[in-house]
Amino acid sequence: MLSKLIRRGLAALGLATMAIAPTATALARSNSGPALWQVSDKDTTIYLFGTIHLLPKDSRWRTPKFEKAVEGSQSLVLETLIDTANPQQLAGIMAALGFSSGLPPIASRVPADKRAALEAAIAKTQIPRPMFDRMETWAASFTLLGVQFQTLGVEGEQGVEAVLRQSFTAAGKPVGQLETNQEQLTFFDRLPEDAQRQLLEGAIENPVEMKKQFGDMLQSWLSGDVDKIGNSFNRDLQSSPELRAALLTRRNFNWSQWIERRMAQPGTVMVAVGAGHLAGESSVQKYLQSRGYKVKRLQ
Image (tube, rainbow, N blue to C red; front, side):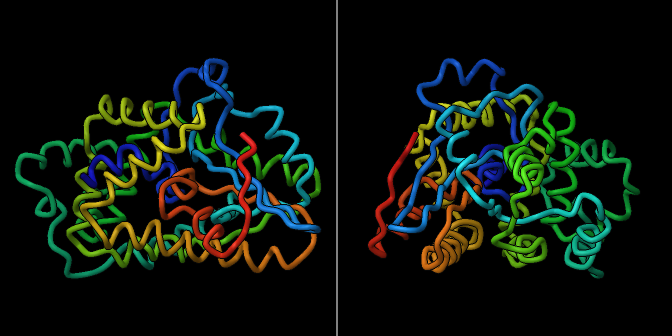
């Protein structure tokens, strides 16, 4: 179900940027740490690392092999870059895409038995109630999810992308992106309304259940269980071909083409994207292998 995807999977797709981690000692119990791959030829090396976008403080996920890859990389490429010094830029894009006139009331976009939960979630945002009636359904989902995950103790500053970006910037290494903020949000803006409404239902699910789902997913990530991550995404997305194409397969194909072009230039690059993109039969690695590239798993 898509509601399960919103609870567990979008953190590993790099769009909703949210997650709940197991305890900080979880990595010590895992076998090898999050999965890391390498694509290389005689003068180019590209590391592929699957990420989780929000984590609690003191999360431990960096390993000696990963640190060696970071040290050897001349640049970092993420899915997208958010300008934290200029939040108005992202807010402006969100406002342009996420608000429309003539929409049905937000309460009518969920089943009757979920309207009380919707109203309770809206009240927590401290955003004027009439604004939600003007929000596109996907935008309302994101707004409500932001509040949900604040209550669960996760922080963007602790997420993998934020930590890596800070590390590369401090070392004077450039950081690039595969997609713009507008491109990412447009994926959701173009979703069919029924898919957006399922996202909205997922955004108001019980936080206890949400925490359990993310805990399971993150344990798989920490232990490098790529098969389990891939199987979860296959189950969650099979009911919506539109969502699968918009969030997963098209983006994976585009990114594999970017990597193929980059392989024509010498140097070493780390590409860090949501873990769901590096798992399953439609993964970035599968596309690259179909083009004849050798992809080696390092951990």
